[in-house]
Amino acid sequence: MEWRERISIDPAVCHGQARIEGPRIPVAVVLDNLNAGLSAEGIVASYPPLGVEDVRAATAYAADLARERGNSGATSRASDAADPPRSMLFQPRDFGARRVAAYPSPGDHE
Image (cartoon, rainbow, N blue to C red; front, top):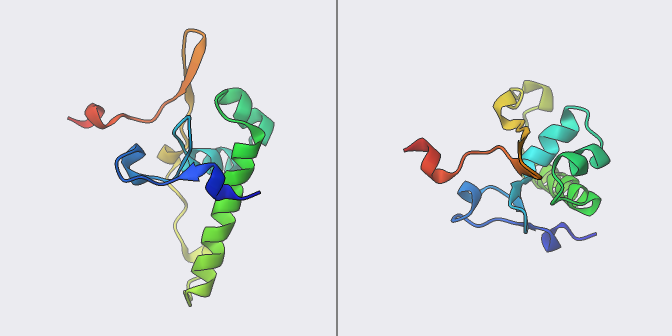
């Protein structure tokens, strides 16, 4: 699978974060949920606009980034890096029959 078919980065959308095309769910949300122990099916159940292929695309994207970083000559070990902030683990909110990812919109900070 080619992750580029499902993931896009646009500075004008989602603050420039890599996101799943269509539902605009940041890749970091998917990866943080996987890291928290959710299965691909569990993530799809929490975020109905996603499919299992979207979760796989997110992991393929992360793998490509890790390969790039490894090829850049970086010498730091993964254990030296700080843990990602737990604030990046977004929980879906239930708005009636529709579940929506709970990440802030640009207007929420003004």
